[in-house]
Image (tube, rainbow, N blue to C red; front, side, top):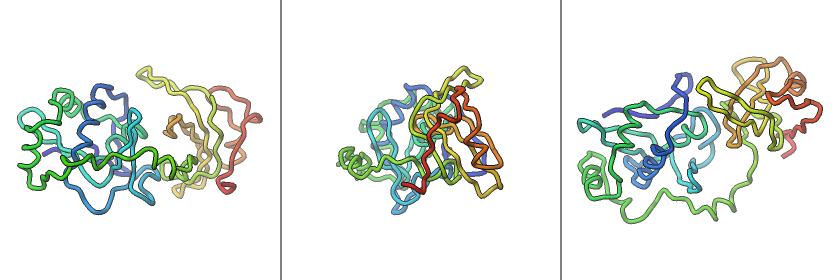
Length: 241
């Protein structure tokens, strides 16, 4: 059995684009949780799961995650043990799973069949409760009622002090040609050093670029990747929420 997407703070991982077809197929596996536990795993890189069961959204559908695993069968009957946080890692932290796992998922049959069901039951911790109802699916109407829509309290384990309204603050271009629009700026404080981070984030609050300054004032006066005049940027204090 091979482990996939078990990420930890302090350990590097590969980042990059992931095929949409792969994500479409992997999302189907989220209907079939394995090794369900009573507690839940929080993201080691941000505030997801800090105070409640974490959730992740893909193609307009939201599922609770962090308290179960997925099982995928590959070549030679290789079994991949996957944390259900994998979608959060891909969507929010640009995690790119190993090539062999991507190929295993894309070449796999739809998990909604008796063969996959029997494979899961053959495992030591296999069970069939999930076939009766889609237990990881979140009622989005209820989620909207509970959501405050506020900016995250932490980014990459750093405490958010100030952030901007959603806007166009330029683009970041990666070595592979991928372009990401900067929709938010955030000034954050980390316990790891005495400076202040200026994070440039996309619309999902993912950090696309960062700079370290000596003071909050320096962060606020810094030029953005889009050349926005610092004097025109409206900053919102987390203390005012």
